[in-house]
Structures are given as C-alpha cells and as structure tokens.
Image 1 (cartoon, rainbow, N blue to C red):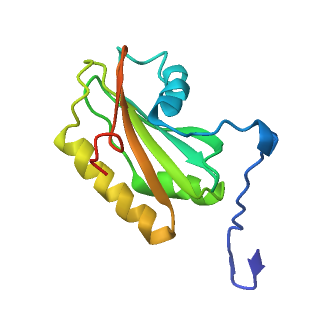
Image 2: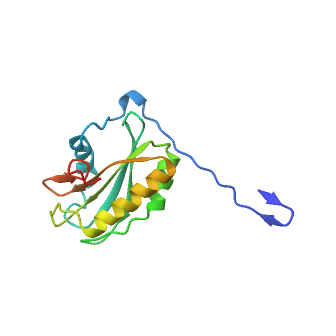
Image 3: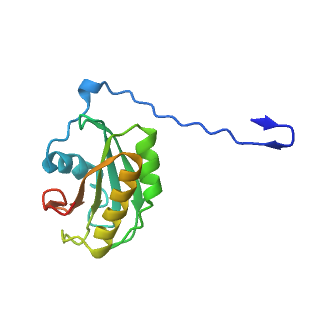
Length: 150
C-alpha cells in the first residue's frame, strides 16, 4: 500500500487445504497422536530434538502438522508466537504439542513443564485448547493428558 509520504507492506495470510474434511485423520487418544508422530520424528529420533505441533478442528480432525523447532541432542528452543501464529492461520480450535527425547527418557524436564505452561496460557489468550503434550522416544511415548499433567 502506498501513501503519499511512505510505503506500508501489505500482509497476506493464507492456508491452502486440499484434503477433504471426511479424509482428515481424527485424534481420539494419545495412541492416535503417537501414530502420526512416529512418522514425523522418524529421521531425528535418536539424533536431535524437534518440536512438532498438530493443529485440529473442533471435531479433532487434523488440519495439519508443523515442525516448529529443531535443536540439539537434549534441548530445543520453542517460540510460542510461532505456534499460535500457525494455529490462527489454519483456524485451528485445538493443538497437540509434541517433542522427542533422543535419550529415550520419557520423563518431562523442568523446561518441558514450563514450556507447556507458557503454551497453555497463550492458547487460552486466543481461544485455543491445548489437548496434549506428547513426548516421543524410539520405542514409546508419554502423554501429559494421560498422566494428568495438563
């Protein structure tokens, strides 16, 4: 947009969805989530940490998955704004946060708990629901929802 004395960048937001609603995977349990995440973490499971977020509609049908962060062997930094920005872009009603532990230890770290709390507060501020935080390891997973941590 041009104004007489300066130029303002125009912002556009888009989300292109080619999947029919009836073909979207439905999340009913943490096991359903883990099935999707096994594929997402296949290439990094023992090598480095990554954070992925599943974005869901009101019927818990998966709108998409996004790799939010890549880190080192035992830590990655998560920017809550990126998670929320993507959720708003796809008009998600809920999200499921996840990350992997290359060590195989499924116990949430202090940072995992703090990060989850920050994301939960951000979700509440914009009307989203954080359904779960799943920690993936090569042979198993843990669910904050199943463990009543959320």
